[in-house]
Length: 58
Image (cartoon, rainbow, N blue to C red; front, side, top):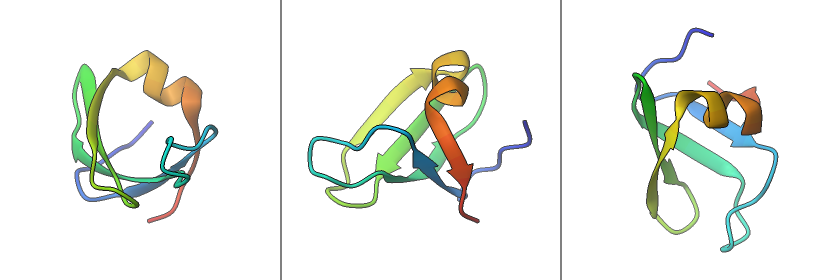
């Protein structure tokens, strides 16, 4: 999967704030994403991220 910093993605499950759109901030073995609803940042292993991602928005 071709991912770049600055891309927006939609995840299958929404964040507790209700938003399911995220901004990629770090790409590598771990993925760092920022919620576009509340600005919370989380780090996920790449495998978990790819499993939970629904689609790339741009």
